[in-house]
Length: 278
Image: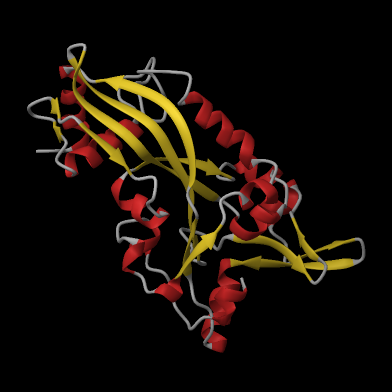
């Protein structure tokens, strides 16, 4: 937060926030990239179990996986993450969807930064604090205070493409890299977003009724906690000429996994249909 208050007035564009414009185009002062990933584990008890579950699923299955494999009981057989990964491989010239072929190669991105992985091999994400239930019940720990709602991005850091494995092209993932990509900004997508109730004593979460009615202040234990929203920070920026939005990237946390998926003609046809590839 000190970085935001110390920065020159700057508002992140929606194109950067939504990922349509690469964060690598931003100047250095608009990036914070030195946060250790393990801080998520020491700063919150809710992060590691979800990460461990995700990694375990990629180490105990093949072909079917919700993040980067086939889906069971779905009209679309390919997961969204697999479609994204196939698009990455197509851009690298390793996948020819019309010919229904993969080129055999081995890719090692284990030394890449989060900014680099974002553009070359990121294929899925893990959401934290996104649901109404999480917003109402997640502990007000250090991670919540710093990031609020955030996502952990998932990238393939070691993978093999195989042109013919028992008669089928295949993608084998040996390692993934996890990192946080977040924006420190106060853009509103709709209504003015509530950030909590603040005082010099700290921050409190509103109760169920207050969460809906959003009173201007809440008194608790003889202390007045005042309503703070995105709009308050935007007002501060206009009034004082300070307040610079920036992007946050953690270091990359590497996990060894073992997952393989074989692609048949129908899979390539579905990919062409869903990706809009020509």
